[in-house]
Length: 84
Ligand SMILES: [Zn+2]
Image (tube, rainbow, N blue to C red; front, side, top):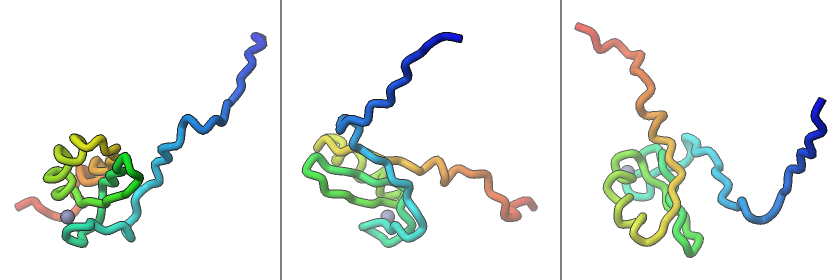
């Protein structure tokens, strides 16, 4: 067996903890469920639904915002009957 020194260094480097968004998180613009959290360099957090995240993302990214994006949840195949 190899002797691998596996040291998990818990330094302050990784601080951008991505807390999952929940149904209680609402879009700051339209109050729909939020799927994207934008964190501005100053530390302020903004929550957006998929629609508004798409609308505001370029402007926020230009300001150096970090994004926690859960919009992939929106692409879960629809189960509801949509077949004719
Ligand atoms: Zn919205």
